[in-house]
Every structure is written in C-alpha cells, then in structure tokens.
Image 1 (tube, rainbow, N blue to C red):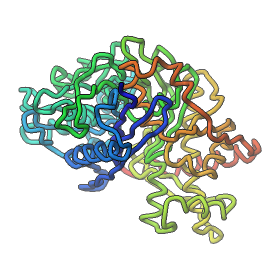
Image 2 (tube, helix red, strand yellow; image 1 turned 90 degrees about the horizontal axis):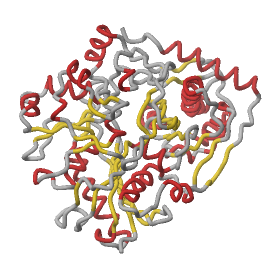
Image 3 (cartoon, rainbow, N blue to C red; image 1 turned 30 degrees about the vertical axis):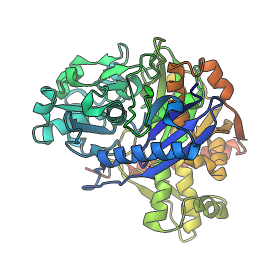
Image 4 (spheres, one colour; image 1 turned 90 degrees about the vertical axis):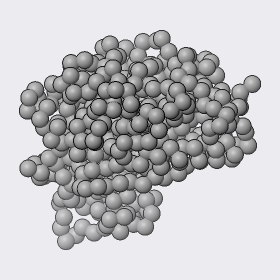
Amino acid sequence: MAEYVGALDQGTTSTRFMVFERGGRIVAQDRREHKQIFPQPGWVEHDPLEIWANTQTVMRHALAKAGIKGSELAAVGITNQRETTVLWDRESGEPLHNAIVWQCTRTQDICSGLCSEGGQDRFRQATGLPVATYFSGTKMKWLLDTVPGARRALEHGQALMGTMETWLIWLLTGGPAGGAYVTDVTNASRTMLMNLAGLQWDDEILSVLGIPGERLPRIVPSSDPAPWGYTSKEGPLSARVPVCGALGDQQAALVGQACFSPGEAKNTYGTGCFLLLNTGGKPVVSTHGLLTTVGYKFGGDEPAYCLEGSIAIAGALVQWARDNLGIISTAPEIEQLAAQAGENGGVYCVPAFSGLFAPYWRADARGVIVGLTSYADKRHLARAVLEATAYQTKDIVVAMNRDSGMELKLLKVDGGMVANDLLMQFQADVLDVPVIRPQNHETTCLGAAYTAGLAVDFWSGPAELRANWAESKRWLPAMTPEQREAGYAGWHKAVERSLGWVD
C-alpha cells in the first residue's frame, strides 16, 4: 500500500520535490535553482527545458533520499509560479520561446491599449482581475503576435500553450506521446481569460485578445478524482503514479495552512508577498485594488474563492540589498543589521522595481529610498528594507477589510522570510493582530500534496488536513496606536514619491 504523496513545487527561482507522509511530515526533499534571464530592462524569462531537467533531477533525488521507490507514492501534486507562460511544439516538446515570467513587463503596451479602449477594470467583473502585465493573457497574446509561426501553429493544433503546471503535467504524463493538456482552476483564474462564475474560458475576452480558446488547455479541479494521467516507468519516478492535484503556489499555501473557512487568511513571504483571504463560495469583486481569484476546488465540490493582495517585491528586496548594494553577505544577516538600528531613522524604501502591484496597480512607479539624512546608515536601510514588506502587507489588509466587510483577526504566515523574528514582530505591530507561524513552514508543497492525496482518498477531507496543522510561534502586537499611525503615514508619503516616475 502506498504510504506517501509527492509534491512538485516549480517556483520562480527553483524547483523542489517533497515526499510527505500521512501526518503532513516531510520525509525527504530536493531542490535545484534555475537561471533568471533578463533580455532587457523589465523583461524576465526562464528556460522551460532547464526547468524540466531540474524537475526530473529533484524527483529522482528526493526518492533516493527518502529511500523509497516511486511505486510507494499514492499520487503526485503540482504547485507552480503562477502567470508564467510557456508555448511549445506538440510533437517535439520543444519550447518555441523562453517562458515569460509573471514579473515581466513586456506587455505594457498591450495593457495600455486595452485600458485606453475600456479602462483598467474592463475585465474585472468577469475575471476578478484588472488589466495588468502580471497576468498570463497578455503574455499569451504577445507570444502569438511576436514568435514567428506561433499563431498558425496553435490554431492548427501543432503547438500548445499554458502556465507552468500545464507544461509539467503534459510532460510528466507522456508529453508528445499523449500527455494530458490541462490547467487547474486556480491557475486558469490567473490568466485574465477565465470567467469566475462559470469557471470556463471567456469567449468575449478571448476574442478581444485574439486567442483561440478552443486550443487552450482543459480547465480541471485542483483535486481531481479522475487522474489527468500517470507518470511512466521510464520517467523520473520509474513508476506509474496518478497525477491528479494542482494549485497555483499561493493557493497551495492557503490549502497547506488549512484556511478552509471564510475569514481565514494566510500571507506567504517569498520572492514576492501574497495574502489570500478565503471569502467562501461566491466571488467578491474588489473595489479597493485587490484581486478576486479561485482558492481551490476539490473534485465536484463548489469552489472556494479568495480576495488576494499581490506584492511583487518582498524577499527579492533582501536579495537586492545583498547582491546589488552589498550591505549584507547573506540574506539572514539583514535581521541582525536591522536590529542594531532599533528603528528606521525616518528612512523608507518602496521597492517598486517594476511598478507597484496591489492595491495601487501603478506600472509607472519605480523604487525609491526616502527620508535620508546624515544620521542614516546601512542599519537604518536594512530596517527600511524589512519594514517595506510589512507595510505593503498592511496596505493589502486595509483594502481586504474594506472589500470583504470582515476585520482580519489573525494572520497565518509562511515562506522563507517567516524565519525573521524581527520582521514577524513588526508585522504584528503594524497590523495590530497576532501573526502565527505553523510548525511546517513548507505549506506550498504541503498544499499541493494535499490536493493529490484528497483525490485518491489518501486523506479523507479538509477536517483531517486541519487536524494536521499545528502552531509553532505567535507574535502579538506591542506597538502603541500613535507609533503605528505615524509609521504608516510615513510609508504613504514614501509611496507617493514613487509614483509617476515612468512616463
């Protein structure tokens, strides 16, 4: 009897494979980074073949570390960097272009044209999303309009196109030899092409963008009792294992944090920062700059919807302070340096490197460091770098409370930055709510495992998954209201200085 579930996490900077047992404990894992390709300012790409090679490597190595065979896996689930888009040849499996990454701003002219014709919110009622370079739909249009022969190849069924989970599911289940061509409902909800109410491709939007909807992947539940396909004995698992679970990375963290009730929220602190609030069985269309998205859909059950606040630069700002400024040698050093300052010395850093995401959606913004005096030094800058993530999260929570009509009571957190105690305490202070870290920090991979395991009855349902969740540490607010208000007012002044930089 299979005693484990495998989860593949294809992220922005690396690919991981984890093996979980029934209690949600990690048995083994392996990870490989991939190159970040910057063809010109604001453009970001990945090599899909490098990612596929890394995928195979981490799956084999994780099994070896666990000392198990692929046949001991009950199922495989996938979670992925959302919005990143791939176009490939159906017969050879060769990409027709590098993957266009979610951070990429090359579609700004397309978005500007769409906004001039119908406003930034022209598709929001149907999709829950504003027109922005962030989403996959305009990336797909760019590929079809720019790559020679791409449109004809897609229209004639000679090419396939989708987000990263579509690419990897297709390869894992056979690739050119009949691989499954599907996208899960959470990833589909990030394309700006799916109607939230019907959970189907929206014909009107497809027509506007010139994308042949009949050639897009089939939309499926996040957890599907009818497996999309099986891995092969010749593949990286050397066994026939059902592939039947998939979630975008932030929705996977929501499931891994067991946020199954309306009003429960989680924030993931990674390259970017993503806060999701479960709003229940009906989509809430935001009027305060947030996104409406599908949280998950288990089999034939009704979907759960979420409000989401997306922040482009969080952990990436710490990397920038390390690699570009050189004020630290390793990412964890930022906490010690910031702690030496005690406070920010009036310094604020707004990391609008490629514009500001929620709740502002300002592509004309660029990064600024403000409030500098002769008193300020690298310690205050380190403090401002960390505080930027907490203040951006505060912006999201304020908007979320207004949209949902619910006041956030506590915030579950995960991701690499939650190891930073100073940041987590400051987050609790500026939000004025408890911040809670789970024992298992790897909630994204865990959520992917849960979707696959639910599909094959490895786990019985959300109640069992909730029982697996356990608290590790809790931070309580310790800031006066006056300090909180003054600090947040300074942040807003800094944000105003970042706007309108790009004509």
